[in-house]
Amino acid sequence: MLSALLLLACGGKEKQAKSEDVAVSTEEDAKEEIVGLIHDLYATIAHGDGDIDARFACREWRDMVTAVEAKDAELEEIGFFNEDYWTEMQDTNPDDLEARDIKFEELDAEEGTAVVDFILDSSVQTIHLKFALCQDDGEWRVHDIVRFFVDENAHEDSYSLMEAMRDYLKEPAEDMPELTFATMEGIYDSFDEEGNSESRICLNADGTASWGMIGSLNYTEYTYRIEGNTICMKTKDVESEEDCYDYDPDTRALKNEQGDIYYRQIEE
Image (tube, rainbow, N blue to C red):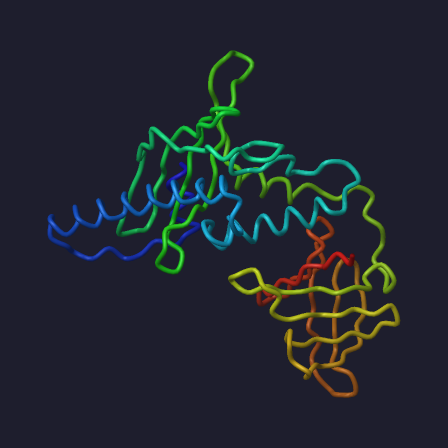
């Protein structure tokens, strides 16, 4: 089931006929790259270097985490994330993290999907994990983390963290207030593949709005109206069709029919 979901999410590639020797070489290369990625990932965490998600996770994972963090930011209590999801530790990660007993449960080098089981060992704790991986822009990246736990019958069970995040985002917001110009006032950014702000929508409390690319002096002015949970913007002083965005109160994001997503930014 996990492999089917992974293939659907990553997008299957059309297989081409290859000789047996080339297929074996491709599989061995893929295993070497994936094992190297896992070791590099935890060495990077142990040394406290860099943005782990940007370096080792696929785009869908990063987008999902961004949406969950946006929802968590609105909560007074602890949200979905209460620990480092790469290590399951709440405090500072130790410097002796080691992935061992790495086993490939599934691998399709041509399709660019894999499922790998391993043990994460350290001086603090030892845990069982599983990664679902796919090729993202030609590079192997982590698509999902499978966690293990002991159920009420003392049996080991597991769950997909990607699926858990997706279910969490579907949970309705409690006591969702009616949207008004005042409550929607704010800055909403879209992001590129590296997680950098790319373009920006500014909604003002007087019913005006603007859109522009980050770093550009050019922008377009709008007026907007609110209909339920939909924000419809129309170019100011120019006859044009409305550009409408559905507002998701859980992720605090605006999304239009073309799939463009703008996340509300938390002002410091």
